Image 1: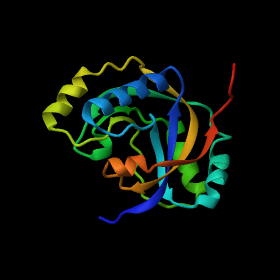
Image 2: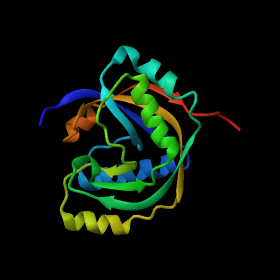
Image 3: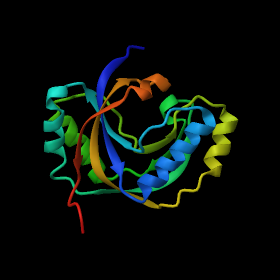
Length: 179
């Protein structure tokens, strides 16, 4: 499988969900000797064009209000980046954001949007994944996402070193900030 450098566009949850999920991720990272990472939902993955990332976010973010996603369930898989994750329902707003980022980036990547927030990146047994998925309480039936980040990374991400090499290259708030 060929690997390449890409830009991943992430939605970042607002508080209190951000702190809650960050603490879960850190806890699992310690327990399983796995990498720590920021809680996020990947909206799009496309070509690495460092000179245009700010422009892509500027074009995609202004028309986009904060996004609210409904949590469906905790799942696990044998895929490294989906070891353990919270699956979210698709929304029209999320689909629009995915398309607007792809258009702004002039990118025709075949990224398949499947809204989820990963909690652990580690290859673990099916039994451990099953036990973990049933042990996690998701206290937020809905999660609000209030910013968009562009992250340079290797695709596909396959190991701890790949995760630790991720670099945020740009960030923009969504919708109105403040009260």
